[in-house]
Image (tube, rainbow, N blue to C red; front, top):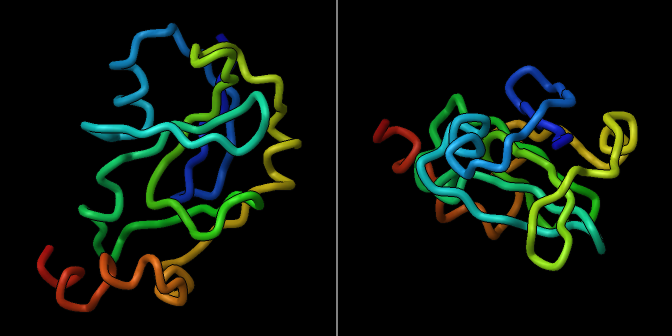
Length: 125
């Protein structure tokens, strides 16, 4: 099925194939655990559930226009039909309009992220 991979490290969004195996989500977003966040009626993104817990000075973020704060690391966009993953209906260009790349310095401006991105936690890496 069609998916879109968000890579904040090189600031790209690419169309990829997804087989339906959850382990493939883990591989594509470089995560042991993942969460699903909806950003529309029929679309959502799988993100690293431990992204903020494992953040370090190299971590990069992205922000969707429908969210209040940035997400750490990669994202995999799929359609969502009654709780089941399906091909996304979005195109790369559609998603590019809704995504903003966020640096660590910019992420530090969001109060929700500050406890995770303190100088002490970032230097412990």
